Length: 540
Image (cartoon, rainbow, N blue to C red; front, side, top):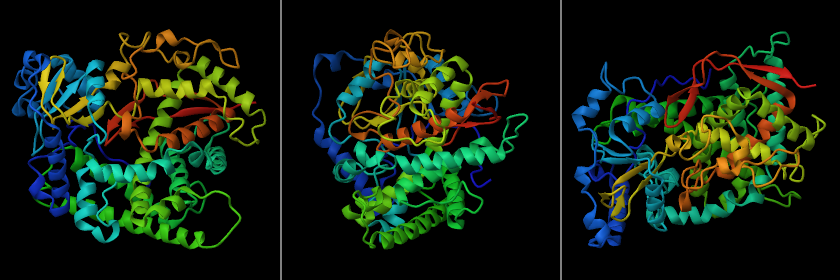
């Protein structure tokens, strides 16, 4: 059980990563300087607003929301938010305070505005500038810039960098990770990994009951780790075999620890910026272990790359190393940390919706049989070009249950949101998940309806599009974010999920066995939990 997650439901919102004016002094020179620089960048953009829209708006202090003591009481025994995950918490807070409210900052964190108005989403994104601010995991910056500058050379990575330093990294890695052909060159190996996953399931599947004699979620995490490891490290870990690389097993264990620790020290209020607790020191040890194993894999790969061969293309890792070794180390670690639980959770969610909608699953299988009539055939760039229904199913699954309840930004200018003044430097959490499940924006929002994502007309398999069931506001559905800070791993995640779903549904008819719906818990994402069982009946 190398992936065992012990975290319970959310205790506080995931929107605590923001511009922290209080914490500057506590995290040391380089991190503190970065925050100060970010503050100066915001200050440089400011000019006192005196336009009519601003002066007529209600003041920030008039915005509804609980006091600090009231917020704490919500999570006490008997409180309104006790034992809720992020989805439930956001829904209850919206019921209590309306479509815009602010949460008080705790333990040195500033207030955060929660909004469920798509016009506010657009206003926030349209005014984020060329260097959007989305404060990430504070522990990243502390570890990389304060504790281990010897390894990272002062580079925090895309998660934690802001301003010009963020833009410098993003501009370097965009051509490597966002270029379609760079990502799709991994399709043959990702397809092979998906085949091995199916082979592994066959060894675990009871041929009489068609159920797995293993934890499906755990196995799916092994697939996700094997897949992202090949893309990021150009290395096979053997996690789907009987003899996995021992270091891979160690790395998987530490990645699971990272998600638990990060929720505790980066999302929930914590005193670590002021006092390094024994628990936080264990978190730093986990970072050390991940860094050691990852850099060893990179060094081994570099030795392989020195051997000349006839390859016409270079792997993602080779291209990152050509940019800068520190950048390569940071990006590889970020891909591994972000590409395991997120991808496996998204894939599991989509599979759950397909299992609960057999007619949609049958329709998707018809498309898959068209592109892959022989189950032993290979997926190629050519035969995977035209899979509109598969891609529509993925979009629809992520609409109903995305891996995060919203998108976060720090305002870089004074804004008016839903008639309230929101000063520059304020955190804004845009609640896209709630709106994606509202009939106001998506007709029959409770129904799994992939047809809403198809273009006008029909697919090659005769499925009629239903675009009128899709929101006309493009800011309501943004599972990978928006603008310059769109998720850097978007294309990789999509390719991995598409490949696995093709292989799974080409091999099995999938049914959901529990009588209750899929449950979710809060780590730094929304992750499926509880009773997760599927029936896998072989397809003739």
